Image 1 (spheres, rainbow, N blue to C red):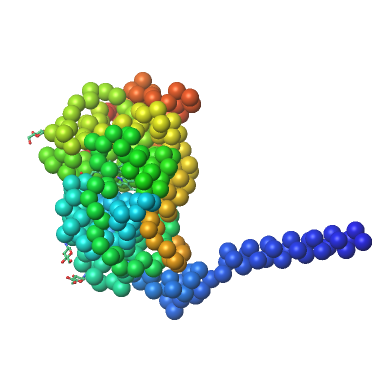
Image 2: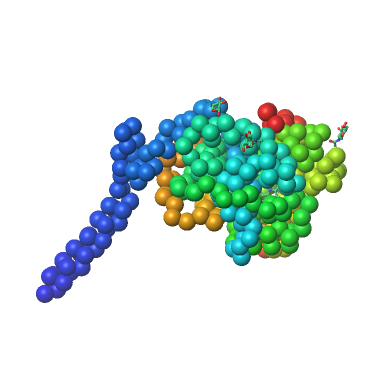
Length: 357
Ligand code: HEM
Ligand SMILES: *[C@@H]1O[C@H](CO)[C@@H](O)[C@H](O)[C@H]1NC(C)=O
Ligand SMILES: *[C@@H]1O[C@H](CO)[C@@H](O)[C@H](O)[C@H]1NC(C)=O
Ligand SMILES: *[C@@H]1O[C@H](CO)[C@@H](O)[C@H](O)[C@H]1NC(C)=O
């Protein structure tokens, strides 16, 4: 009796685990020999190769990769959970580029749409699928990045997004959090999305210093930006101080007024500090928030995440840039201990601008 019941339980458990296995391992083999979860995704493999070759110089984490991520954000954030602020992650920024590139917050975006436009025209993708696939690929070219998801099947965008949906570096923390909340994002999700600024540089905030990076490792998707925004020193406003620039104590580095304000605000300071040298936390929370961002306003998409190339890992740990240490940190979170970090050897660095900016 007891045995019969036990074996029944065992066989139910076995059947359940086989089902789960089948769900995980269900594969389609494409004509190319590549495998994916859904036959509809097969068409994407050659497009991924085309984008890598023609947009990202074979797989670089350079200006085009950084820009592709920024473009995906500026496209998707044209959305409100209350309606009336655009179609979200629909590619409108590329298809209606003449309208959206004119918005103040989209300064410099015309370089990106211009570059992506011809490449897009040579694919069969809608503007939305192109913008968000390019962002997943480009981000993944940066070592340390999570492998972003890709959902396939956005219809062509209906109209440009209206102006004033994209946050500006001169906005207050309250205004920034409110705009993100209007698009459906919580405060922790906003801070996680700002991990993007670890592969970022500014061209138009201060046009006298194009390509100025936001951290000392602009080609690596690490947590360095969360550390370096907190460094105090001889801070002085540059020529872009009216447009949201606060020069960093690291020569050749810029920090955005908004990033600094978010790093110091009571609502966000501990979330910000919590990402420092916590690569796994940053990767998982950035990945989850990006998955949400890249499908805003969309429905009935097919999960084609397995066409996205797997990024190289970042071994860590991060370090203070040479000559900096704990005494230089403007700590704003007092509830948890600041992580203990070594310092890179040598003299204080001077960062080079990102080429191609
Ligand atoms: C508080 C919200 C944000 C503000 C105020 C902001 C502002 C800016 C500004 C002013 C620049 C420099 C533009 C230039 O002068 O060329 C920039 C660059 C960038 N931003 Fe943000 N950003 C925000 C959030 C985000 C988010 C959520 C993402 C992506 C998920 C993102 C991704 C990027 C990237 C990748 C770049 C670098 C582009 C390049 O190097 O070509 N930003 N951001
Ligand atoms: C904008 O879109 C038009 C087509 O509508 C295209 O010809 C042009 O190259 C695009 N320009 C930029 C800056 O993306
Ligand atoms: C794509 O198509 C355009 C014409 O629309 C062409 O000028 C361009 O060179 C093509 N190739 C690539 C790699 O973008
Ligand atoms: C501001 O602009 C001037 C003239 O273009 C330039 O010489 C100077 O280096 C800039 N200052 C900063 C802090 O970037």
